[in-house]
Image (tube, rainbow, N blue to C red; front, side, top):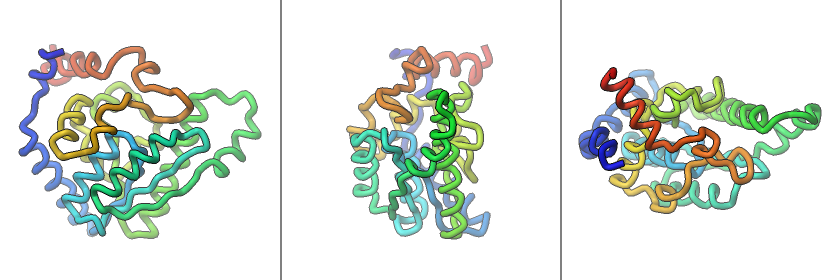
Length: 223
């Protein structure tokens, strides 16, 4: 574990500066001044929110919480911690009624299909609010998830720009600690919170650190 941490170690001051500059430049070069993102209570959306607020100011960042009826209170509490610490604008939109209408017509629907449907419902809300707010949708997918294919196509993978798309999960943890993301978010078990008790690493069958080590060798160093 120590070897992989050394291998993917980044200068956090420089990383923060580059990503803040990237958000500011990409948003403004597209003719926009504001952004919107889904705020799940997880570490990926938390660090993107912190970066966006630093790049554009809290008044120009809208975080939307989109819980389903099985979403945990912990996730909502953690999303609120990000809102409180950054001062960003926020909104809460329940998606239960929106997706349950469809689920009721599909009695044999699997958890995976449910999760994908919820992710795509959230995407449509973000893009609707991007039109309403005249803002860009920020992505919150990290490099590990992208290379593993651990996302929903046209769901959480959809965005105008994705500032953390080249950071491994371990690098997300390190940058989050550096930027002051609440420790409750950094220390909790990664989960998309799609159903009760769901865990990313349980679903994948291996840890993010192991995935990062393999990706580092195969992709970054081309072993």
